[in-house]
Length: 336
Image 1: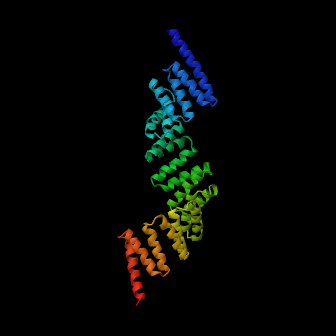
Image 2: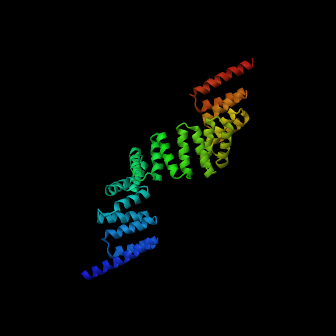
């Protein structure tokens, strides 16, 4: 009997070595088969289960990886790197709550691993524990000051806490490391917008569209920044770009109407509000603005009709009530 067990262990060792070689060559599917064969021959060896988990993880077979690591830890709770690996597999499948405990144990064993600090920070970020996430990202950055992902997601966590200036500082540090990431430029531009820095926001949005001309969100942000800076012609051009890419953007039609009104292009403004109202016929803001433009065009009845629509949608709209009352008086006076 002991000789049979010895033969099984020896066979498992051979299959394990084959699995290692296949993993090193990047042949993970074949490596998985080899590790599974080794486990059949020696099912109580935690190292075999752990390596099966790693090969499966490398191939993106996360369920197999999680099962492998869990079995390895059940057999040997202090197995080196298994807590980290299981935490990563749970992280990869967005099982963040489960990952947090394993990554915490991994940090106790490997406190100088910036990658574990980052992964734990991201899990905290994903579960809306932003202060804790920032602390973990900060530790990762102490260990590796140029850790790009930690800089980016620290900025995201600071943004969630409303600390836009600190978020921008983190994004700016990330841009020093990688200035060709259009998604990061969009984050930076949105942050500048929220912080009230319209000129900087405009520069950021321009950078995004230089990388991705079909990024309509950046064109929309660019239009908003141009509006803030009083460049209504530029804003209209940006909103036109949005509408070429996304014709159903209510906000672009609405804001385009505002920009056209500011340039006294009243008929074009009405047409833009009409397109917005095709998309959202019960939006009282567009009806209010349309009424204001009709008033500027001296179409009193048309303006009153718009404010009637506002009050049909929102009877307590004080602005519409006052505007309508004033227009009715003007109309009555004009009729003698």
